[in-house]
Image 1 (spheres, rainbow, N blue to C red):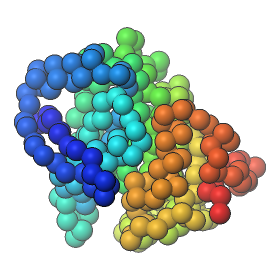
Image 2: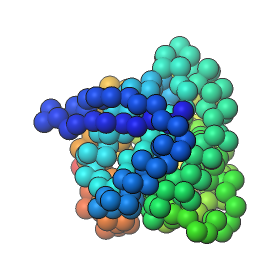
Image 3: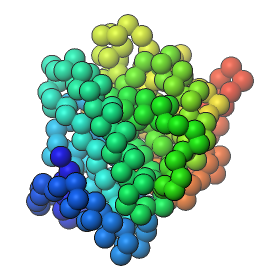
Image 4: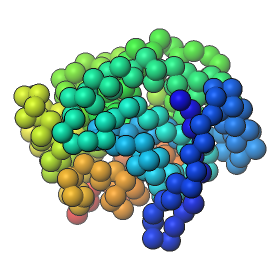
Length: 273
């Protein structure tokens, strides 16, 4: 199902969903094309939510991110069917796996049928499974014509760390830059690790994922959210860093909030104290 989102910004930094309007594929495509054609930017910001996130919450988060990043293009949500319930983690795992071919179709729609020139992707938590698996399976080089994928952000990814490293091997030339935000204070990922018995890609500390093709940012020092799992959208330092990344395409060495570190000869980044 495709939807149109209407929202307004609030001085208190809250987003109000004013209307949810179901659209046919044809109507959605026409509406999106019109917005990109007559808007000030032909960029798309695609948000993929994580575990235990209902549809309305995901809509609000998408709108809030677009507002905070001052994004002038078309913000888009891909909402896979999360059960929206903390005890239903395993249900969400099944549903996110089921959604993978549908997400691939949606990404193709955004790239090839709307007139967009650039796509940025922000995935959170379990939603990273859709993004990483889809990107790794894309043919290389990417189909032409089509919008280029510029920035891909893996925020607190709830995916097996070793699996993530394997998938990263197939990312070459599929986006301009890949950025991973991790934290050792992430209680949701700690719970996921207890279930799966293996480190998650969103963990920092000894399990921090550092690979050549991904810019890894340890966000532990700025993580102030309740579960340490939504800091990408709740913390001003992370939002400021995302702004430089999405709006300016700045590499980590040019983003003022980050300082370089080394792990086994490879570099990663910390937020400045």
